[in-house]
Length: 108
Length: 121
Image (cartoon, rainbow over all chains, first blue to last red; front, side, top):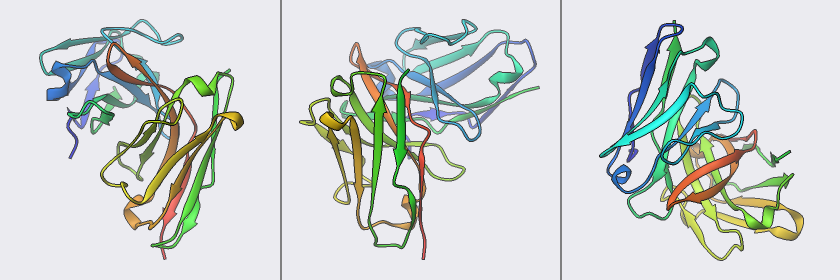
């Protein structure tokens, strides 16, 4: 079982704001990173650290954290944001990464 | 442009072996930490193994420890995963991914397109 817990599915109306959460004890010590994966494609890093976006990631994606919960927020969701989203952080040993179970985002 | 291209996947019988390769280009491979991450059909991502930039530090997920071996050849800009004693539950798309440390946290910044490994009789 994953040390990081995500809701399996979330939906959002087009243009609205959605928050995807990730819970785990390791998040009290380490930042989460977030990945977007569309069907048949490799994951893409969208958020890392406190709230950092790699080059090319739209600014509607943002990250935050509080206690044992990290969040990915999409402000003004677009149809192309429909995808699976995974969080990742170091595991309890601190030696390597562990992924959350993933959240399927549907844009209505 | 950063490119990671996996190869070596295919159909193998339970108990068999397979060697995956990942060819890197567009960045200084020898400076990057590398990983294998897999995804079973219809399932989530699972980290499999890590190797430091020099190859001196290696980690494995418990699910593959003792059966899989990660290695790299910095002169050839290549990452490898030797998989032995394969099981049906190893069936997955295997991605190679570079990782970096950010204030003690980990992030996977570049990913290949993956190679499918199917373990079946």
